[in-house]
Amino acid sequence: MAFLDPAAWFATLPTMYGTAAALITDPAGRVLLVKPNYREHWSLPGGILEEGEPPHVGCAREVTEELGLTLPLGRLLAIDWAGPEGERPRPVVAFVFDGGALIDGSDIVLQESELDAFRFVPPDEAAEYLPAHMARRVAGALRGRASGAAVYLPEALGGDGRGPASKE
Image (cartoon, rainbow, N blue to C red; front, top):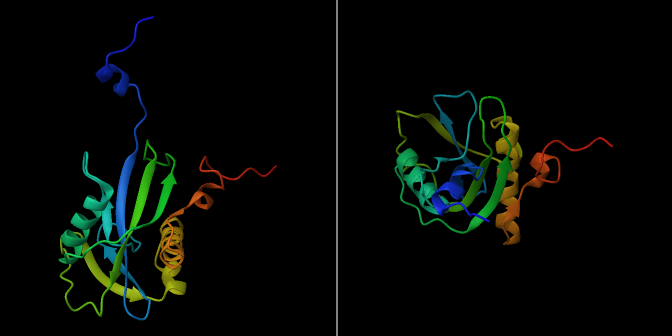
């Protein structure tokens, strides 16, 4: 039996995209959201991971780029997986890390090339600003922060991480 050389074998494996974001709150527990200028909805500070970049490093980089802040990131709070959809041909794995709490937003310097605004919103109002998948991530990250354990969000995928829930 002939085996593929490592480079050829790795080239046959499926790939995924990765994102990383930070859950940052204020002392009242309100969640910091940012408004990208390239889409309609709000988001957590964060973005796409660069080639070979560890998720926690990418999260810190994105927070610094977007908010002008260098924050000591805490532990992983939530992880989500979303299958290929629309124009996205591959799955995406999303990591949400604990960005701690800010007294207020006075030290934030927005990356004007990508962001129009930021605001702190009560957790129960976050879904009014966010698309459904991001609202689930925020809720999951808040649960992870409260419980002390990272939360995997299979409910965003119908319960089993494989797609919409079966109606059987």
